[in-house]
Length: 149
Image 1: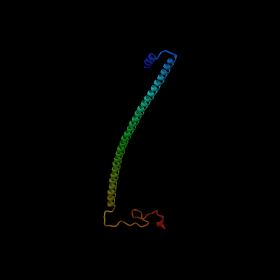
Image 2 (image 1 turned 180 degrees about the vertical axis):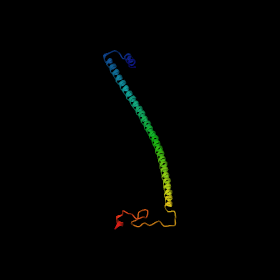
Image 3 (image 1 turned 90 degrees about the vertical axis):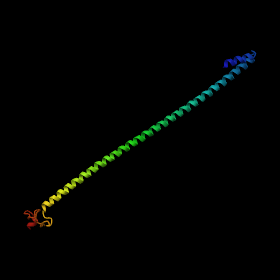
Image 4 (image 1 turned 30 degrees about the vertical axis):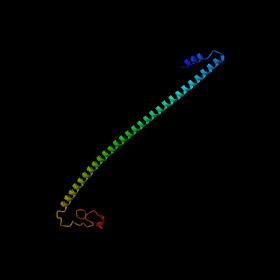
């Protein structure tokens, strides 16, 4: 592009030293102008590339953030379900334990009642009263020191 313009300029000017100086100055101005335009173009391109990269990085960051949030939500839901299952299992286990204990208590109470009935066949008669020196059978103790005095 510059070469065609220089040829055009040379064809218009006579070849005197002053004229050649003007042509050289004009070519220098054209080169300077072209360099400035290329520098401006490069700066614009760099700015556009930088802006596109920033936009791309922001999109990736947003995607990553959304992905992490989704994973967090999934994990929270998973652990909530696990805790719910654990709670249900523990509740069932302890209810079974309580039921088993209650059954054992009822069996022991029934056994105790049966034992009491066997010891006291007459319900209407009062239980035998023991004297302070008597043993569990109601007979006097032979070895009790307090009763020997």
